[in-house]
Structure formats: C-alpha cells, structure tokens
Amino acid sequence: MTSLIKMRRLILTALAMMVMGCTSMPMTFPTTLSKDLDLTRGREIRGESCGFQLLMVIPININDRYETAYNQLMSAAGNDKIANLSIEEKWFYAYFGTGYCTLLKATAYPLLNTPNISKKAIEEKLLILKDLRDKQLISEEQERARRQEIVDKL
Image (cartoon, rainbow, N blue to C red; front, side, top):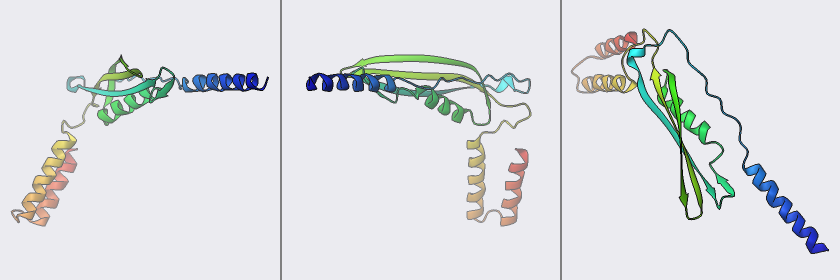
C-alpha cells in the first residue's frame, strides 16, 4: 500500500513538472503604421533564438525564444521603426531531444528628416578627430568645434 502511494506521488510530481515546463506567456508584436517613415532607406534586420527540448520533456531556453529573438531584432533596429515582420521556425533532431529555432526578420525604417549617418560613421569621424588632435595637427578648439559640427548635423 505504501509503495502504491509513493508511485502515485511520483507520477503526479512528474506530470506537474511536465505541465509547468511547457507554459509561456503569449507574445504580441506591435505594428508600425506611420507616415513619418523614410521608406527609401529601409534595411533588413534579424533576431534569432534557439532552445532545446531535452529527452522531449525538459525545456531549455524554449519558452522565451520569441522574446529573446524580438529583443535582438529591436536592438538591431536602434531608433528605427520596424515593418514587414516575418517569423521562421526551424527544428532539428538530436540524439537526446529536439532543437527549436525562431528567426524574426524585418525591415527597419528611419523617421523622415533623420540624418543618413550611422553610429559607426560617427565613431570613425570622432576617432579621426582625436587622432588629428593627438598628432597636434589641429588645436583643441578646432577639435571641439568639429565635434560640435558633427553633433549639430544629427
């Protein structure tokens, strides 16, 4: 009789663990409908996240795949707005379970009247200014003035 009770507890515990491991929050993606977007300067961006279902029972990074991929996508967009969002699901078999990957692709559009200059380009210009100042080819006042010009163009 005691072993039957232990067996029931074990089965109920295992079922409870399986049910709790397979829950996640629903994900909704905001839509961007704006007339203020510069549709001529769109760029492709992406975010991807993978998870694994170990022994078809134990979820590892499964439940937050969409959120992680979306956060990567938004990070890649920066201040731009996203549109044309597409979702790809891939899965693969492994010896001890199944892997699942979520890929989000979108087009990032800047707002109208924003400068067409990337963060990398700004950093390069500032490094050039610093290098010129270090080599004493420009004065400190000239460096400050040129830095201000760069900021004013933004």
